[in-house]
Image 1: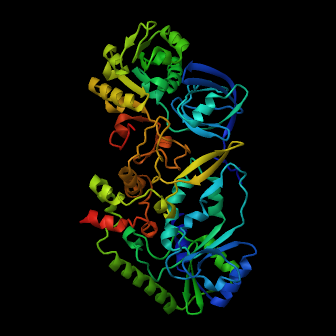
Image 2 (image 1 turned 90 degrees about the vertical axis):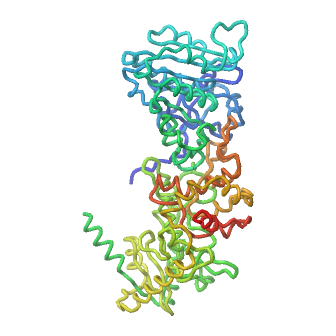
Image 3 (image 1 turned 90 degrees about the horizontal axis):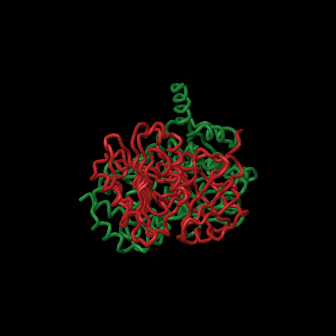
Length: 274
Length: 343
């Protein structure tokens, strides 16, 4: 009789480093006890022992198999506890779950990425993947918005990205200070600066629901086809297995059928933006 | 291959066995040494499952609807540690679930035996359980299985069906597991008297006719989905005005199995029955809650059962058992709601 796999049991991962990204956001560098692979855009359930678990999309490269980075914003009970964790402690990982970004479909395309706040986490993983296949891509434009310059995450990474040919980074903040010399306003204003060959483009959107909504509407106005706009949906994914029911969005289980959907797949479903 | 399978299946389907009630009861008591045997028992104020022993064996209820507890609780406990080692539980025999409950297992199987993510706890329980369904020859006020294309007697999903006729127990073999059980574990003999079988079939047809009469005007499984889909918010506001979000309808529903994973020290996960009718069921850490409004939440349950589940699985996620109507403290009657939608 084959050994039965227990789908609820987490894999242990040692916390090796904690990076402060912003006052509310930290990146946890984890070393899983076994090789752990995922496709960019897939998510994991990360648990703090005895406290709880929550869904996160890894922010590290899907090509790295012995290390995993997860960027966590402090928003509630579980994430507040995680923010107090120190290197050497253990976290639990279940997954990877769901359908990630179909990067193979981005070949010979321009990729426009619209991100906001902690929505940069899945995007950074995607960018690592796109850098690895950049020869196949026409261009990658990242439009990233945050509330203030202090809230901008992955600052050293942004600088690296700007040095890579074919990659362009546009940033905005809602409220600037004297250190800021990029755009000021909601992230969608960055789309006014984008020159895209829309027929040969795909767009990726990830961020808070309100940004996802208005970002998508603007991309549609710009002429991006509904099936070329990829959205990473946030729902209350609990089991990750399409069983517990918490993330149902119409007849989709976001955990299993998503979390990445094209806009045309979900546009007729209820409550997609909340 | 298909034909061989069908031949075996049809041969099993046609097999009736007979055993004296006395021998059946002593046989069941004998089996309690190797199985945990549960049966629907008349406990004086309701019909519900009890573990069978000498004291209650004669109180087993045959051919009457329906135990208070749905069959799902045998396979999905309200609360269990799903990170503990999977212990092999004692094999079980469950006597008396009506076919509406047995058919509900089709939905549960699709969710929990899903090839990509199989739940080992559910799998082990399904494998080590023999289900002896009871043909319904009576109905209760809110029974309406027929409207949803489910017969009040089992012919496919259970292992065996049981019928009490005078002092005889008749057993209809349904599955291979049931065939093996009846032939090797009981002193039953093949029933050759065609008139006895005809009489059982007669009772089955009579029950169907009664259900047809009482379910008149109730939309059937072909139309429930479109009715729910096009219902406007006035209907959800009206019916949810008496809802207190207690979740009784989901707890008692044979097909509702949504759950929550609760973390315990040692990276243990406790899986606990949850309900989309509880506030906060879909709330995310950022505060957004797609089901924050009561009428939305109320509607969600109907959409899930009659629109979304059928688009994903084999059929609607309602077997017409009527328990949600009986359990509702706000006296919300889903059959009234459907009759109103169908007007």
